Length: 432
Image (cartoon, rainbow, N blue to C red; front, side, top):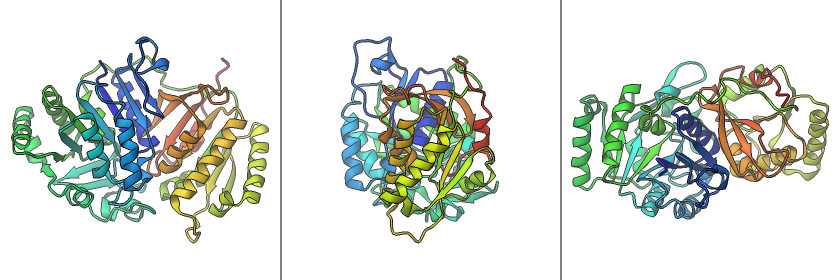
């Protein structure tokens, strides 16, 4: 029986959760649409039945409430009974969302009701990515190396779609539909497994349906994971959080050593697209030296004449075997809605990737990554290798020859070392 099923609100975090599960020794796969059960339990390409874990990646974090609830409802309907009562709604580690866009509470409520989970356990931090939750308040590291309360974070506090203006996650999620969410703070967690299990059972008996857990260090996750696994023996649970959920639930398994520590690129050029406008991604783009660079205005992606000229230029560069890095200029005066811009970027990325057999595809930007992979028409993704914190290398599985077995990296705006782009080009090329 599958140990856990997850549904992710974007593709960058979904790939990180896929990698986390694979590192723990689980046979895991990430699908772009909810898979149908299969009688063939020995071939993950024919269905999820043989897998220890599987997920479905979506663009929920960019959707309005009505679309988000309808989307998760259609997916979750197919996930009923797929595991032994442990489900995961993978959200961004910075919890960026709002009552109107990417509403975590509304989507989680529909997910939980669809799979029969009566309790939602919200994991508040991920120390491995420098995300910490203390007394219900979220803190996150930034590209300058400093740690900020999320409502003072230099990027997340001014996010163009869902700026985080409240660090108190109980209030943040309360505004989205959970006014009675409870908090289990670090003082309870540090009392140990038995005390935490007793506290959870007391709250469940009192009717609490949503509980936020502090996470300020790795040992907090271990204790929380032990308690949730015990509660899951008798109660279906929807865990809400980033890849910290997988870190909490499966640290006890033997690490999977079957995967290479370094991935070989396919023959062909690297195509990178930076749709994120975070300062960290902007710095990574500036530092990249191994690419032909093209900075484009958002309006060019929505202008058929400019778009065709850009496409022809990019295909010529890649056709010559040169690495190409396309980035959106930081022109915030344009009138294009963020979601429309992400869709236009996705269509552009897909058009290039369908035409040229790339050696590697790199996409920076959560919404852009989510929509691009949906546009590409990939069937599923598997973990290939660790590469950077929160940004593993994954491999595409598709019927289209230009895409099948294509290695790729999807990174959120806040992820990766300064020289991430150039590090991709230094991977050796496979001759197979």
